[in-house]
Length: 134
Image (cartoon, rainbow, N blue to C red; front, side, top):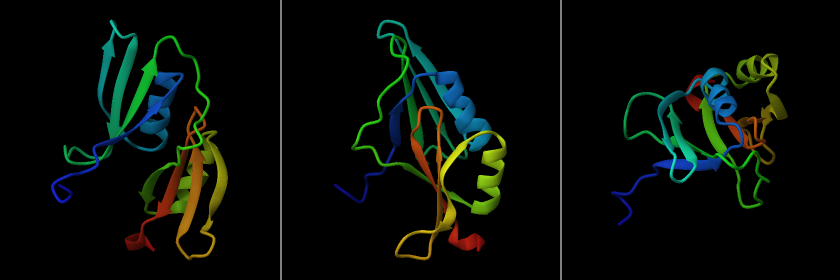
């Protein structure tokens, strides 16, 4: 165990699937890889990610048809994305109306440049300046 294991995806429940898919694809540049309805269970699963490599980590958006919104759990942290220019990324996201609760800058007690953006359901996505890009 261990070395042959890998992270497959992070799952979050969303209230409006189309709005969330738009946020993750149009604003964060992910690709919608699959979307499948499960009528008997009254839910839809959508998997999104970067690139075509099947070994890349994905985000699973789960939409339960009878639930319009969720309270964010206290155990949820965030999804982290590496970006080439954190300041330009936040500026572009803000122009599209995305909430940036933590503007770009060095993290507390460190030098890594980070920022946070919120998706339509209020989930936080951490943006981290790629080290190779600075």
